Image (cartoon, rainbow, N blue to C red; front, side, top):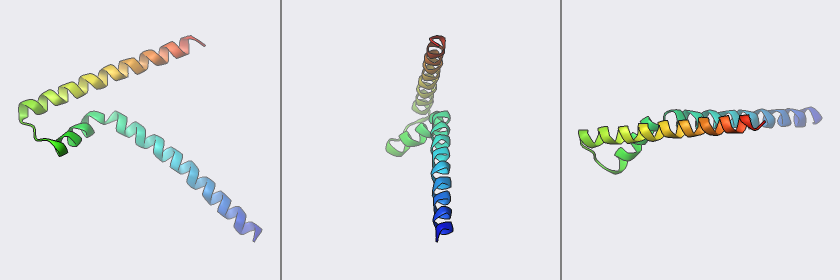
Length: 82
C-alpha cells in the first residue's frame, strides 16, 4: 500500500514537471512562429487579396521585430542593474 502511494506521488510529480516543460515549449514555439500563425488566424476571419496579404505579413514581421528589440533592451536593462 505504501509503495503504491509512493508510485502515485512519483507519477504525479513527473506529470506536473512534464506539463511545465510542455507549456514553456508551447509558449516559445508560439512566440517564435507568431508571424506564420497570425496570418492563418486572420485568414480564418477575413479574405485578403495578394496585396493585402503582403501588407499584413510586413506589418506582422515589423511588429515582431520591434517586440524582439524591446525585449532585448529590457533584458539588458535588467541585467545591467545587477
